[in-house]
Length: 284
Image (tube, rainbow, N blue to C red; front, side, top):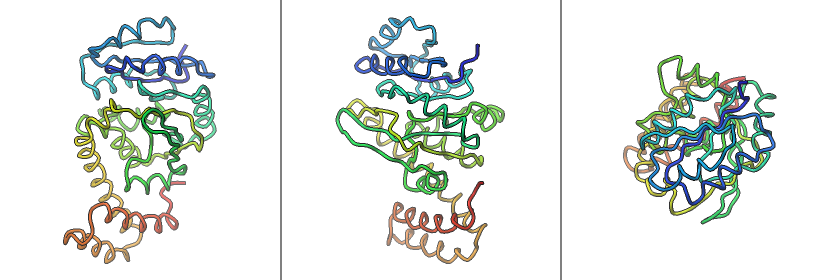
């Protein structure tokens, strides 16, 4: 039988935390899922740890080390109506899958749904990203508005947005910001995003995190996404209300003359975007 949910989790040298992540997934209250684990060429004993689990829902694959390729490979294997992302050092709360499945079943227009999450390990805090689509797309100008390992996605949406056009879901040219690029692509395709206002994921913070080790490349990739998104937002604003042209031109002149920096430019455009969205919501 086809599972309702496909969970995709790439693994690379995650032996320290892997058992916690796998067991938090296998012990979900929602049980109708397949668990696609892609070992991304680990050189520690991660693969041996995965092989100790005999759960029939696990589909173990092994590839050479190439994170984006491994992630895309796992996504292509997914058979479920929904695809859930998971990282090999995080932990799901026991009812995460049930909450997200119920939400997606009740909100058919939502393409991707994340949630609030709590960090643990090096830092401990609760993060509450924006809930509604309009707020999320505004926050794209400030940074990544969705926690990647917290999301559930409609498989048919991913097929129509990417596979039907000969594209992979994750763009290899945006390594370490591939999720930020994914949200941009989905928004550009006219699909809706949301976050459930409930903590459903424990997100580990440690010195071993790739986001910390590769912060330079991550920031470079994220900047490319933000620049492209900023241009699209400005075009959309002017399409809806051309009276903002002079204000936008003034902001870009200020940035070009180093009177405001790029982040300040994005923040100013975000304010305008919020104003226009109140009058012209992108989708209903």
